[in-house]
Each structure stands twice: as structure tokens, then as C-alpha cells.
Image (cartoon, rainbow, N blue to C red):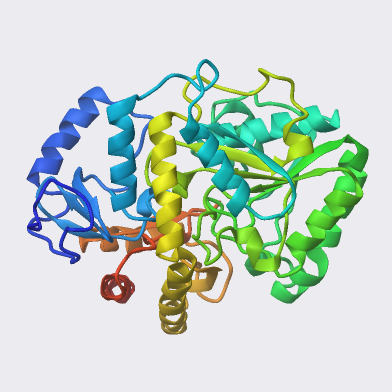
Amino acid sequence: MNLHSTVGGPGLAQQRHLVTEIPGPVSRELLERRQRSVARGLSHVLPIFVTAAGGGVLIDADGNSLIDFGSGIAVTSVGNSAELVVSRVTEQVAHFTHTCFMVVPYEGYVEVCEELNRVTPGTYDKRSALFNSGAEAVENAVKIARHATGRQAVVVFDHAYHGRTNLTMAMTAKNMPYKDGFGPFAGEVYRAPMAYPFRWPGGPAACAAEALDVVTGLIHAQVGESRVAAVVIEPVQGEGGFIVPPDGFLPGLAEYCREHGIVFIADEIQSGFCRTGDWFACDHEGVVPDLVTTAKGIAGGLPLAGVTGRAEIMDAVHAGGLGGTYGGNPVACAAALGAIETMSKEDLPAAARRIGDIMLPRLRKLAQQYPVIGDVRGRGAMIAIELVKPGTIEPDAAATARVAKACHAAGLIVLTCGTFGNVLRFLPPLVISEELLNEGLGVLEEAFAAL
């Protein structure tokens, strides 16, 4: 298959190759059409239009081949057009595309629930329900927790991102662009400080020693444990800046919730499905949530999400209380089964760990060279660097944007994130080659040299 083929998949040449500037003339023409037809409230990172993708590359409409360090925001972990995803989806589409599981069920939905019950943390009896998006999964997890406990309050964290529906906007910390002008938001949502080692007063050691006590003390004093239906946390925060809490924080928080009858919900939407080097980020410390929300990497690029958890909690909701017309669509379920099979067959948790073993030493070396890099963090293939004014912890969003722009111009797709817009996050497909991974890191190093 030649480099400029319009067919995606693993047959694409795995190399960075620019034939025009970024964006090229065809993408610019398409961008003009986009501006005339698509609502301006939808943004994009790169002004290019993709025609093919596979492995670790994206091909744009001008024939440029770019290295992908974004994976569609941790979605295409098994690659674009992974073989087992394509074959299962093709077979399913030929049979039927929709019946609505709530009208006439089908085996694929049941199979995905069985797989979720198998791979998520915990050996207890589980049930799952399927939805369309991560925000829907979080919203339904809160519904389930409230119904099961008879309580209303929900505790979330600084720097959290949980979605764009009304309830999940209330749960999300960052105002711009997610919340600004969209209120009023749902009530009974309370925010606690995140265990953020780099920005904790007193530094990482103080964070490890103090964070759990601070959080549980605030819940006790300001909300009251008997009023809390659920504590919802990303085991590694995503949009908030790939914040990794210190060891002991998550197990302690889970134990606190158990002691007080609070449903502990792990939002594994970005961190799940092998991304951090385990099947789920909770596995790193053996944390077993009551409910787990999943999406993104679950189905190789098709829209699907799930809530999985203790049978007695999931089954507390009355028949008909959960659902949605497209939730657990049969084509998306087929994709999920292909993606999960790929993760197992190719041992993608090990692949993620290998990516981390390659990336982290080079990023730490880069941080030694450039004091604008204040922190290097992450696990597996969920890694970030935080940029600051040298010698301080003052965020440097402008420098972050310049580095990202330089990477994009050179053919490397990177994403920014963080409450202050000063974090570069790296989410390469777990099937990326080591050669392409190292080349992408070289592009990043050149961008910092230019900065």
C-alpha cells in the first residue's frame, strides 16, 4: 500500500513524510468549507483533514504523513482500522446496524458486558450497562449511586474532567471552554482538592502525607459522609493535566468510602484499556472501585461507553431506569469485542509500559536541558510534561502553545491540556513502532530547541 492511499489500516507506511506545509492547499480548501458549514463552537487542534490512518500515522488530504501522539484523545489505542475491529464491524454491518437493545436485544451487547465484567478491577459479582459517550457513562454512574444509596451529594476534585452534559459540566473543574456561559449547573456537587504533587503546598512529599486527610476532612466538615452518594475520581486525571496522585491516596480514599457507605466511582474513560500499562489505572495499586466508567479506548474508534460495578449497586435501579436509543449499538459492540481481543492478543498493557520506558527517560533528560519543563509525569503511554516560567511553578501556557505549534508544523500531532493550558500530553497508539515513537520524540526535542 502506498503512502498516499486513502485506505487506512496497518498497511500504511509508518513514517513521517511532509509533501506540503501544514496545512496544505487541499486541507485549506476543506477548512474554508468547514467554516461555512460547521458551528464555530467546535474547535480543532490541527487544520488538516485526514483521509487515512493506521499504526502510528495519520495521512492528510494533501498526502502528508504525520506521527500521531494523540490517538484521537486516547481512543485509537489499538490503532485506526485495527484488523479485528474492521472484520467484526464489517460482519456486523452486513447483518444489522440497530434494533435498540431495549426493544429487541442481541448477543453482542451481552458479550461486551461479559468482557467488561471480566477485565475491570475486582472479582465480585458484576453487572454492566452500555451507553454512547463518556459523559453519559459518568452521568449514569451518578444516577445509579444516588438510587442505590438514597443520597444526593457527589464529591469530585479540582482539575477533574467528566464531560459536557449539564451534570458532568458541574462535575468538571475547568471553566473555559467547557462551562463558560452554559450554566446554571446541576446541584449537590462538591469539589475537593486533588492530590497534585507538583502543585501541592509544600511539594510532593507533603502531598503524599497530607492529601487524604485534607480531602476526607473537608468531606466530613462541609458535606457530611451520610449525605454523600458517590466520590468520583479519575485515577490519573486526563484533561486536568495527567495528574498522578501519590501512592496510597487512591487506596485510602476507596477505604474511606467503604467505611461510610459511599459509592467509589473510578472514571477510567481516558486512563482505561491498557493506556497506563495495566488494563485499568486502578490496577496499579490494586484499588477496586464500586463502579467503573469506561469509553474512549473501548471500541477502537466507535462511540461506546460503559458503567460496570457491583451487582447489588447496579441492580438497585428499577427496570427501565437506565437506557438510551443508541446505547450499546451492535456495530459499536462488535468494534469493542475486536478491540478487547486485540488488547489481549497483542498484550497492549506491556506495549504501553514499553512506550513509557522509552518516553520518560528522554522527557526527563529534556527537562534537565530546558527549565521551562517543570514536571514530567505519567504512567505507561499516558504521559505529560508541564511547562512553567523557569524557577517557578507559574504556568506558561504561551510556551506550551508554541511548542505544540512547532510540533504540528513538523508533522507530529501532540495535544495540550491542564487547567492552566500549560501541559503537553502524549497518547500514542499502543501499537506504534519504536522507530516512529523515537522519531516523534526527536521532533519534540527540536521544538524545544527552537523555543
